[in-house]
Length: 117
Length: 352
Picture 1 (tube, rainbow over the protein chains, first blue to last red):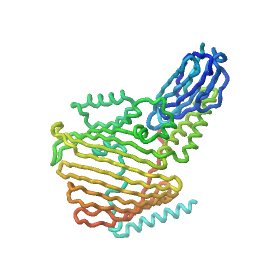
Picture 2: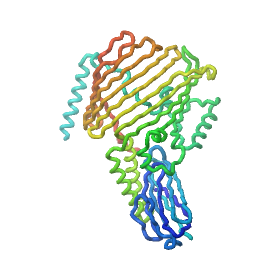
Picture 3: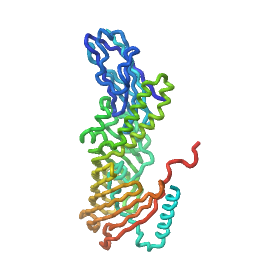
Picture 4: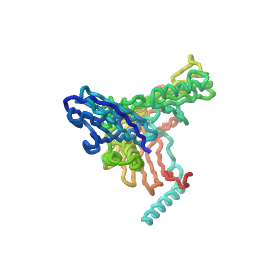
């Protein structure tokens, strides 16, 4: 059974465009998909400077990011994922970590970001 | 297809029978140093001490290192743990949340050295002999790659396969659907790891190690018994499969019986592989320092041929000139013909 990690945080929006970058660390390989409420913001893959929307139009909505990270690095079984948000009141980075037990295992991360004003 | 395989098997059996009829001098097997013996050892701290520990502690966090050392000291009656082996990659003891796979894969020399460095440390009880009392041996070594080559052509396909399976998990509707994809994704990741160890282009590996001995466990009697440095540059071409590698090794071995070996070895090997054949030529030059016991500088030149008869059987032949004999200074002609029976990875008896 796949390991699963969930995190939840608030992000304070402002007038400008909010953008999201997902960084898969520890030299592992991952893909992500982002949804604003129920609307997909793009196909699965790497997320870099993905424009979520202007503050006024996205406030009160929920940004959900689902990621799968796979252990392709045989030097470590550690995994790190960072969600970098900018364009709001202040830039914010949210991190999550996990270790897999066996080489080649994967972890599903679910981040729930509440866009607040 | 079956008849070709049977014909090959008969050819090999015939060669093996012929082998028993030819005078033994022709088939004298060399027991001296080959180029593989000179390459950087995987765990130089163990190699320099001459041990192959059955249990090796491989902690992956600073806490793990501390606990491993504390546990080893607690189990012994001195501050230096006995028969203890530790291997650790210092860079990976910490998390690297901003290191992406792409950055890791294309790292420069400095980053590659840091990311691939490993430290090996071992202690062992050395039994008493006619030349020295019982003692504790300690080995410490480091190994790292300065250049790790580039991915081979299969990595792109495997990356695409992993991304596709990850996308399938991301678009799955239920946890059960997600879990169904897990096995395929793990297999793809393991294939990726295996292929990523077969990198092509320039690879430069370096290692260094020393061993010390403490006769009667007395620090005042401590002496540096062995010291070694290994440098192994190589270039791997993927198609055709050609490999050029060189090795350099310096070894100082101060033995308890008074023999003080001071050896430098330089070697070069050219290797070509086809589907069923492997051909290589290697030259090793050994330079002997003044401290060694009358051994002259010497060169070993060998040609080797491997022929795969079946997936599990290899015919191996080698011919050349060995290092000069220490006593007679004669340079012996060496030839070897043999069959290698590989053991199948597939279990014949199903495990419970």
